[in-house]
Length: 281
Image (cartoon, rainbow, N blue to C red; front, side, top):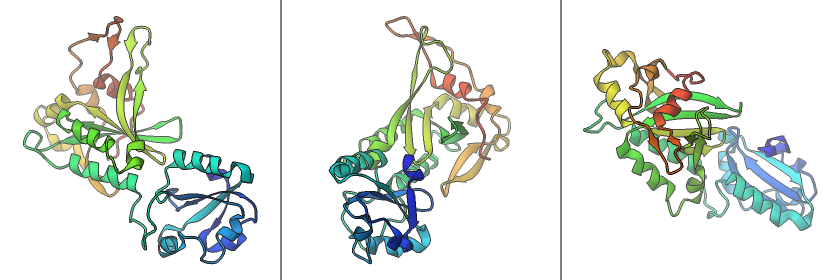
């Protein structure tokens, strides 16, 4: 995220860009990155309406309030540095056709909204709660992590998203978050959680089907524990109070791997995050 500390100008103040070689980044007011480029002379590259992405960007500038961030880089290092930033930041427009309009939302944001919509459509087996947002916590003061409890029937939905052939940005947004849940690594095997990251958000998906059934079946008054709120403009079911987590059934089995280590379960992780978790509702 070092680019946030770079010098920058608003899109309408392009004439004040420096006449030096360097890397530039176009980002909107929400810090979504739309384009990364290089130039021998940054000011000349953006002079007037000469940049090939200008028609796309100017149409949305009033709404998105673009800024051009720049960093001086020697000409001999431009290509290498540009490639590094494109790979790291996965800008929305690089390696795409120049079209008349920008997409309404960045691709990685559209995908997580699509997944949330599907995960909140009731099914025959889960008529009330197909998934539930347990809450959020801050990771190292920078990343806002959002824990989503899903059932095992929907795990394939995540894997399909991970394997999207024509969407490298989406594939790169997926990863695995590993944790020992504060346990000793000599005796416990770390847990791996599928997670989806964009900007400073990370969605962690925990497969806990038994817990969802428990919420629907055994809680005295369902409405007192589960609410509906909006997350990125999508209606999602969420816990009203995190103390529900302490009422979930404990693990009944302890698995060990070939090294004799105990295998941590998703419920271990959820209860590990219990104290730092904050409900959305």
